[in-house]
Image: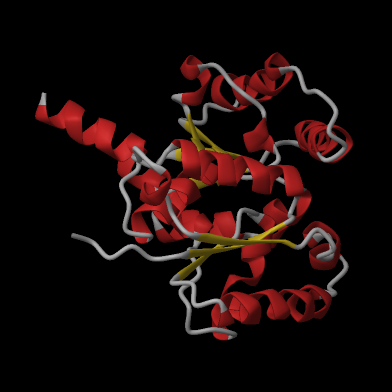
Length: 247
C-alpha cells in the first residue's frame, strides 16, 4: 500500500482559486471517511505581490522574498510535496525549487504532459491566462519541448480574459459561463486550435459545459490529480479511467 503523505499548499493567488483547489482535492479523492482524505497544510497568503505586476515590472525579488517564508513554513511542517494553484507563479518555479528540498509540483509541465498524451505533438494549443503568464513564456517554452505550437490570443481576446480575471472573478462578481465559452470557441473555431489550456486558476472557477470542456485541459484539474496521486491517494478521475479501460 502506498504511503500517505501530507501536502503543502501555497495559496492566496487568489483566495477563491485556492478554495476551489481545496474543494476539488476533497471531491476528487476516493474516500469513504475523514481519515481517507489527504492531510494538507494550506497557507492562504493573499498579501503576496501580484504575479503579473512583478513580472512585467521586473520586480521578481519582491515575490521571491515573500514566498520564501511560505516555503520554509511548509518545509518545517514536514510536507512531502508543495502545490501552488497559480499558473503565473510558475514563472518563478526554478527559483522556488532551489529554496527547498521538498518537491514542488510543476503545474505547467504536468499540464503540457497531459496535453501531449491526449493530443500528440504538432498540436496547436490555445492559452487563456493572465498577461503575466502569457508574456513569461512558461507555456510557450514548454510547448516547444513537447513539439507543440502555442497560440496566444489576439489583443482584444487577451484584454477580455484579463477583464474576466481581475474585474469579475477576483472581485467575486458573477461571470456568465457562456461569455467564457465564447472565448474558448473563438480559439477552437476561428484560430483552429485543437486544445485550449485554461491556464489561470481564476478561470477554473467558471463552470463550463462538458462538450466545451472536452476540448480544454484545465491546469487546476491537472494539479488536483497530481496532488492526490503524489499524496498516496487515488483520484476519482483516474479510477474512472481505469474502470473504463477494464470494460
